[in-house]
Image (spheres, rainbow, N blue to C red):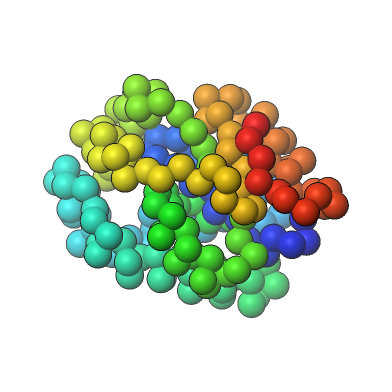
Length: 179
């Protein structure tokens, strides 16, 4: 794994595959998976369950808590693999304040594919009705440092392999790429 990265965030809109890809990356790299959704306060979950999108204020404390969790896992000698939508640049910057050597894997897909996937997953608090709000909030991280953008419709193993290759020390000064 690239030694310059102490942690990874698997990011994107609801339904892009953050949990599946994060688990595959963690298994392959020996990292510790952190499900960002598990850290939402009850009020956020209730709001989303009711079909109301979260706003910046709703996410602020959650992002700070995720940064603290990243720091705790690093302090324990492990490499965290966090799943987190991280839709806006300021959200990613909040996480970067906690861990400056944070890499982002951006899983891209269309609104139609995201809606199809969200409708197909049972028992999750995020309804398909919120997909449009996710895309409205999304500020794609293209061009941001330590960021890899991937087509989320590719098979899980292909995505995990692409991340594995990206995380290897490569000697390149700029790790921002799109695959």
